[in-house]
Length: 460
Image (tube, rainbow, N blue to C red; front, side, top):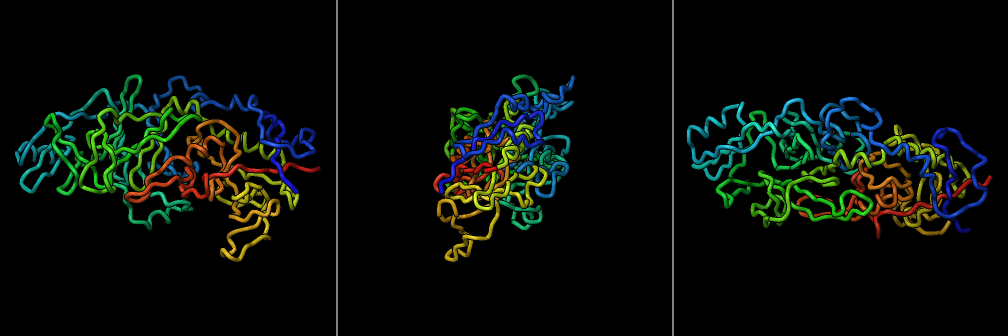
């Protein structure tokens, strides 16, 4: 018996809740097709949806890779899976001004003055260079790090692949800096955002100790790198269905761009890359050595599928009533609120062939601890996992239907989204890289890292 994939019948988004049985085909047909016109009106940003009269200017959003829409125990305060950067009521940006060399009284005063931002570069026990920073009325500053102190706007903890609770993440020795980085946004159009390594602490200071990589620049200024570094990758062709991976670089405390060090915390800096900048673009990835963030611009988000759009796609799949080809029971993706609980109607997939079934107990293969199953449709042997919809809309590069799943985790999204993320080498540990599912951070497996899903339609 040969299975083919179902052409999903047109489901009217105006009444997605009902099952229109007259529109369901009686035979199996190839390739999934979706009625895009009916979904088009759901393709607007949340900002457009609310039509606020005087909405604050949004610079963009940071989304943590590995979380499918929210943290396992829920988003709370400054600790969440995504953080929106809005124009502040009053500018809080800073820019470098006076440089103090050696242990002068002015240097000591700059360090002790809690109203004065400064960066201290310790060259030796006898010599410290202190760079004072003054207020910049043209920029807003946002700080990211592991610390929960008030200067941190977005608290980020280490991402543990597939972790189901925050208790899992806290058992790991963190490699994320307490004050990891800062983003400076221009308050005037085009609202350019730039990233810098390290953030100011509660005393408005950044300290680079003796062991940190630091140096004097050609124009007499100081610069340096943080212990584990802040890495950035800008995709080529923006964050679209034509996106391609860029090259990972390291960003310095002053925002200069360097090639990667030999290992994450090596004291020898990489080579300066003169023709590249620290300016973030839609789809830029920021790695803090323990967590990776995706930067989406406000303009980019306006072209991105909304949660409402993803929900419409989910309901359209379910309205087509896909069936288990063996048990003939109807399958259905659970609601996005139940994204971590396996439902009895949950679709499961054989990752080697892509055939979608309902859950069953047959086909275990003893040679690999019973983890591999034999697909009853094509006899291929491999992992058998439940399918989950990718709920974090910010990770999608297009608005295509959910036809493909990452391997081995089973997160489902559009073909072009799986193809894009399977090409992205994400930093892992101190000197390795591997592709991972953006929804759960599991390292991808198999030749491609993803599989095309083959559904069977109803036979009634």
